[in-house]
Length: 106
Image 1: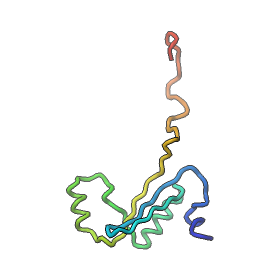
Image 2: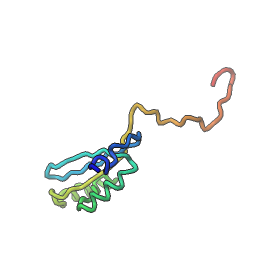
Image 3: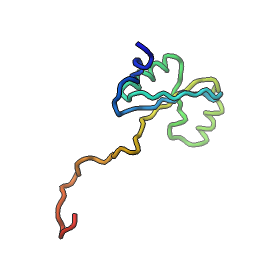
């Protein structure tokens, strides 16, 4: 069992997430995993001492600046998000309202 199979990278489902790990000193890595396996990866990162990057949360800019100025530049932090396929049509396949003819127009 290799790291690719442990992280679920051998699975080929369409729903994927990116997990970015880095610190202020310049270390940086991006991991792509199936979304259903992302919690396992995040749990392993937390176990290894990686903290969640709170600067991604909506808060006043001054508070974010203070948080960045006062944190350890060598502390690794992670953030995650789902991969969005720009070519995928996110519209529902069925209309919420029934289609009707109104004088020859839809």
